[in-house]
Length: 485
Image (cartoon, rainbow, N blue to C red; front, side, top):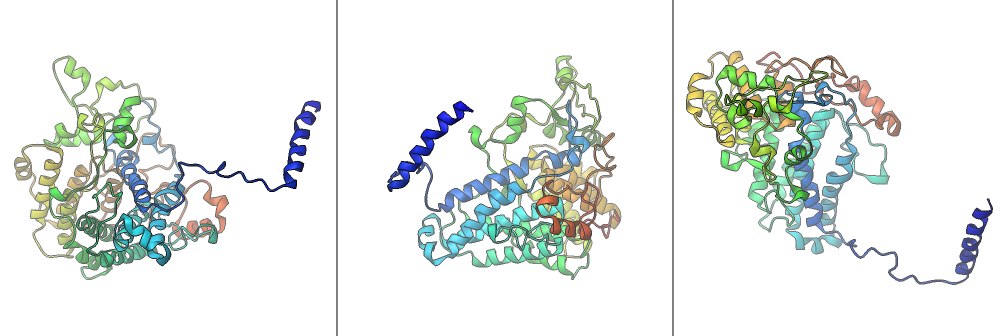
């Protein structure tokens, strides 16, 4: 106690004397490295980096059983119930909102024009906002959307239904497309380097994917989803050359996360589910997706062995299972695929089967397979297609389209998971002794602080949507009109 007195008394005396005069501390408390103005290019770069995180996240790959964990199998057994979403609101979304606000405000717009046309900056930010919000609603279902990003003006936003969110995002995409002008694209754009024609492709491809995701709730050929799909088709990507990806760099600050994963721990392999299916189908892409096991190579008899999916107490050795392609896990610059033409070609084939558009479903089905082979550098696509023609029976054809889409979405985990939930194929068995639920997850639980920090709106969402667990189907996850899954 005496020591405390000796310390606090001089502090109080200093405060007394300082209180008698106004003291100018100048720039003492000003951080010289912190900008005092909004730099839209920096905000955009920062927001776009989260796209790279989204497209390389392994959880969706585990849910759809493209990959398996070797030693620590908890994630593949659904150990996590509640998943954080605040990081998306507080980082990319708030940055994009700031870009929109400052480029829309007459007071600041002229200064922000140094980073590209105001209209184009706003359009790109709106497209990316739509991308992130769709990603979020497909994971959690109902989310804060119309009242989100209001800061202290509204700290308890309502959870909007997915129907409201999707409808709002379609409108946002259309508004963004309509405002793109002939001015320069935004600087700081690491995805397309300010090429607004490519941003138009991105927006329409996003819209097309979103429209098809609603096929189970709006299946009618002239219905809401079909109309949105038809609006987007002409502007979406049309070839492998237009594949949309996040360009990772060799620099450790922005390299492919898969390469980082394998720098520290070898705990992911291609699953037995995927490898067994490729072997059964005599699919040449196996050699592009997976590596021979190290132990089989050392014995002079190379073979592919899939890691058993979601088993407890694994005693498997990394040398005895097939790793993901070395071109991915040991390549810091391996791209993170956002939308591939293969995905879009299969979507067009399905849209024809649904009666949404006219055309030859078999031709797009074959395009989807060919584009997947080309993307991964696999050979002999023609032989594989000849051995696996699209059936004339609609239900069988739709199963083929669904399963080929599942194959083609390897390492595009969140897209693969959403399409698997919507289509119902392939039929997957859940992990052994799952921590949460009793089946493959079909949604993720809300952030664990929502029940206490936004209680009323959280409870309203649960009442409307269903239990906050991994097995509550979200709004668009209904029975498919053709597969009946």
